Image (cartoon, rainbow, N blue to C red):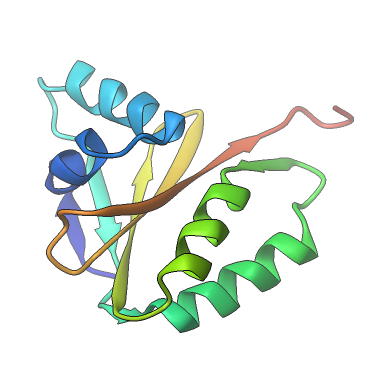
Length: 121
């Protein structure tokens, strides 16, 4: 996955009603001194994204990871399975956000937030 600057997803995040998108947007804007690095996939079909992330949601998290956002992402991909998506990985010390956008990065299709849990939590 090529490295990008996370700010490329700000427009899409700002137009989203997803609470995780708002949370990530606030974090990105708070870190303007040092641009937050990110990685992005090449565009791939929304149908493939739906299949992949439906399987991941069904499989569930590992014992030390909690993922939020699957229901909203899967609903969006189910409602509009045509077209392509790009997945952007934005890493912070306490969480990784996966931001799903259209190839133009104008529409946020969904956001997943992965957080590490303390052992035994």
